[in-house]
Image 1 (cartoon, rainbow, N blue to C red):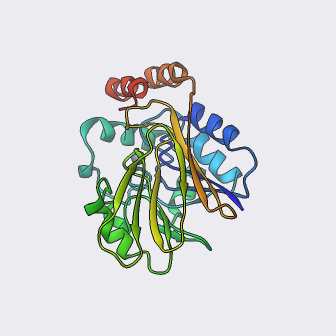
Image 2 (image 1 turned 30 degrees about the horizontal axis):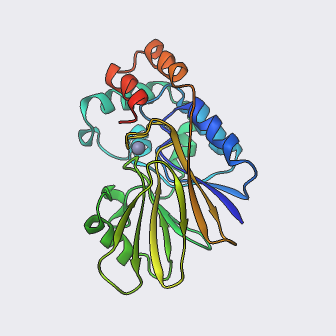
Length: 245
Ligand code: ZN
């Protein structure tokens, strides 16, 4: 099987469309949450996820937009974008987001937006120390996909051990999944990368080859930025797209 693993689309239709084109034929699309928030096309992105029958977990922005978590968690510009999204979300998009679980376990892997440590608290995994509770909660799975930080990277540890390594994957690359090891892979963000690379990020998991490829592609950032300006979304959210930060 060949699976597309995408995360943190954040209403960026241009990035999403090109990421899906780049995936080519896949047996399924898995989305690690945050389809909406920040960008100008929340409904179009939800619609594509529905049409492609993506298997998706709920992100913190998705949860905020449908009123499942309080807005106090968000900085002022993120909050402004959540409120803008709330004002533009269709009933179909809302229903789609409302029916997403926090954690999904497939045949081959487990997936969650932030961390398996209290999934509804949306903890960030940004270091081997922060990765540990997720490793410890993976049970029989040797692979977990996470999003949330918008940073393409991988954590690996030998099964049964406590420590682990952090592998930077900012420019893409392939992880070989070896028996006897546990992996947490963050494919990075489709619609608002924050690892210094402005290209859209996503992953392809090949279950036969036991590889996860992280791929980066260009998308027309100025088109998304123009739409955001017209929508009146906050300037810092518009400029950050071209820096990938
Ligand atoms: Zn996000």
